[in-house]
Image (cartoon, rainbow, N blue to C red; front, side, top):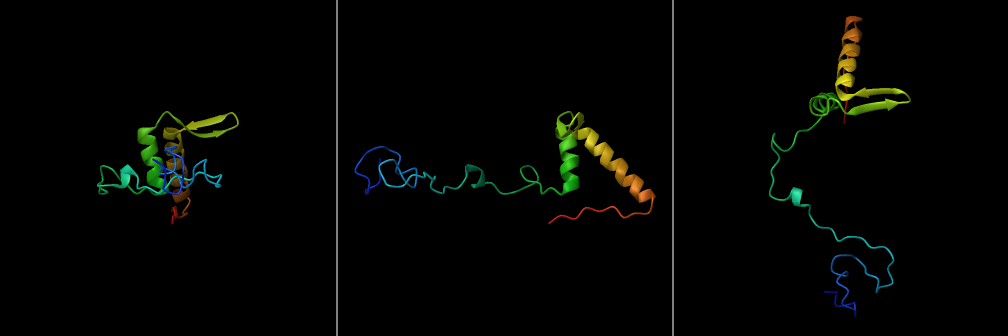
Length: 104
C-alpha cells in the first residue's frame, strides 16, 4: 500500500523514501533495525572483539588454506601469514626490538 501522499498503489512508497510516482529519483530504504541487532546480547559465542593480532590468529584457525595475501605471483594463505608474522616478531625480539601492535 502506498503512502497517503501517493495517488497510486504501487506498494513501493511504504518501503522506500520515494517511489516512481514522486519527483525524487533516489530510492533509499527507510531505516530499520537489523534482525541481528535485536534480542541478541553480545557474548563469547556470538561476538569477539578482534585486535590485528587476534584477527590473524582467528583467520589462521578458521581459514587456514584460504588466500590472505596476493602480490603478483606471491600468494600466502592465512596459516602462512600467521607463521611468517610469528617468525618476524621472534626475530625482532631476539634483536632487542620491542614488538607491539597499536590499534584504535
